[in-house]
Structures are given as structure tokens and as C-alpha cells.
Image (cartoon, rainbow, N blue to C red; front, side, top):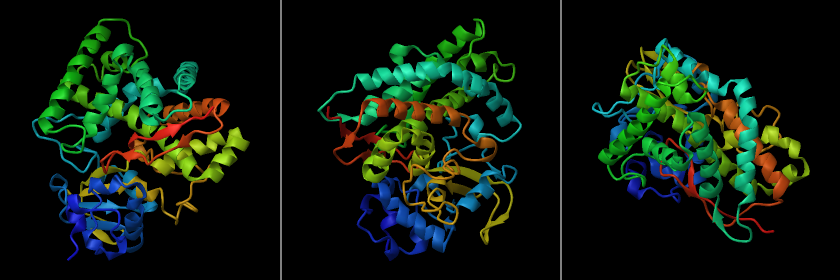
Length: 420
């Protein structure tokens, strides 16, 4: 019996995906995601042969048993049916430590979800985005104008992390000199021990308690001041959220930090990589900068920065001819749905002038659709407008280093050079 996918330490990208018995495919294995395109033949097999796929025993012990939903329309059916498919408790494959639970509104059902989401909505209202546009552009110009020329540098650290961390500091009105703490807390919050970020669950919890301690000081300052337009003030002054339990406050902070960091940061890197891998599309962009508007959602589809979201069945229900039982974990693989040829034409091609580029799944749908999706679009649009004003070519000169995670589909290193 072929057990490769049951043992992450033995999996490698040379394994023929068609040689693996369909019942052994286990996409919880984070090692697969370190090899980039290696995930796609596996997802294609699931879409074609078993689109609602049961994994009775994951190679990742903490994941347990789960259903993989891999086709676009089935994912939509789950994502838009919160009365049957609940977000309560967890958004990842892994159940939280009972002694360290961090409730957050993305992992809540109505009515509490709606109340807490409404409290932070104003920060991404169209009028506020308009007010922030000048600052986003100014910071983007500053970062790009200070990039090294004729020498290799890491695009992830120098551009993607720097820009998204500056934006997060603005949204929270967070002390600018400490802004890199936000990046660290984002990485820690989604990490699993042994994946390269933290060594143990104890270390992860210790660092997140430090996050809570820091933000509690900011809360106490804001709650005793006049209301402002930053996220902490909004939570502190809203009558529905100002009495939140500390761990619930931490949970919502993690949600807002990760939501404001991972999606944009990894799309900023994924876009550079995609254009280098598809030089015809880079030429198309050079010849027509107006294509940035359609290119940005195509980058977000192509990258799919968060590979999946989890739901839990509240009752027995049939999906794709399979009986999902009450209490079962259901994983919506956005990264697979975004490559579903039945819905997205030429889904395996990166095409910056698609006719309907916003039909991707990367932001989710239904009541949990990403609250900051327009802010992410805006940051990426401004970044590419400013890149194209300055640089004819940003060349990728080595293989990317990907994050070891089946949840966050991202990068820690992308070597590039700008030749003047």
C-alpha cells in the first residue's frame, strides 16, 4: 500500500499523483504546499474523481477526520449556507487547545458574528478607503524608491512585509516603531509547532499572550479617549464589543492582523512570481497599464493566499452524493475551486485581462466574505501602478521559499533583482 501522503516526512514532489489511491490523498499535509504547483494535480484528481472526499485519518494527527470539498459550486453551497455549515469554534483543520481558546467573529455564527463584524466595518467603508488612498500611495512610493538596484534582494521582506505591516499599523493606530511585532504575531497565530515559526505550542501561546498584553495597553488608552477611526477605538467604544472577554479580544485581533497581512502580503509576492512565470502577460502589462484593474483580482485568484476555510456540519446533509454527518469537519478548498475548469475558463492559466476576474473564491462568500477585500484590492492596485511607473522589469532570480502550511499559502523568500 502506498502510504506517502500518510507520512509527511516521506512525501516529495516526484511522486506520481496518479499512483496514489484516491482514499489516501490527504491535503492536510503541509509539506505538499512547500512545492508550489505540486498541489494542483492532487486537487485535480479530487475534483474529477471524488469532489467531496472523506479523509478518515489525516497524516497530521491533530487534524483528525475531515471532508475535502474541492469544486467551485460545492464550495459555494457550503460557504453560503451558514445555518447548516457552522463557523463556530474554528476556521482551520485544527481544533483549538481547550485551555487557550481565542473566539473571533469569523469563527462565530449569527447573531454574534454580525454584531462584531459590524463594529469594525467602518474602517473599510468606501469613504475611509478614499481617505487612506493617499497615505497608501505615499508609503508605497517610499518603499519602492528605496529598493536596491543591480543587486539581489528578498522581495518578501523588503516590499511585501514592509508595505502590509505599515498598513496594519495604520489600521490599528499601532506604534510605528514596533510595527514588525504585527508581522511576527500574524505568523505565530497561524503556525503549528515544528513548521518553522514556533517550536512548541507553549511558545506560540506565550507570544500571543504578549500580543494581548500589548494591545490591552492600547485598548486602555483608547477607551479613555475620544473615539477615533482605528480598529481598537472602534471595538473599545462600540457598546456591543467594549465588554469583550480578553481572549475574545485577542481572537479578533488575530483575525484582523492575519486578514490584513497574509492575503495582501502573499498576493504582493505571488504577483511578481506569476508575471515572471508568464512573460507574455508581463509584456501585456507593460504595453497597457490599465490592465492593472483586472490583473489584481487575477493575482488573488492565482495565489489564493488562504488555501481553505473550515466549517462544521450542524446536521446530517447530502453534498455531492455523499452523506456528511452532524459534527463532521468540512474543508472548503478555495485553492482548488479557483482552478475549477467547469466554472473558470482556462483556470490553470494566468490571464491578466480576464473577462470576469472577480469571480474567484479567495475572499469567500456569504456572511463571512472577507471584510477587507476592497482594501486588499486597493493596496495591490496602487503597488502595481507605482511599480509600472518606475521599473520595466523586476526579475525573479531564484526559486521561492514557500511557507510550510496547508492553510496560509505564502512565501518567506523570493529573490529578485532590478537592473537599472
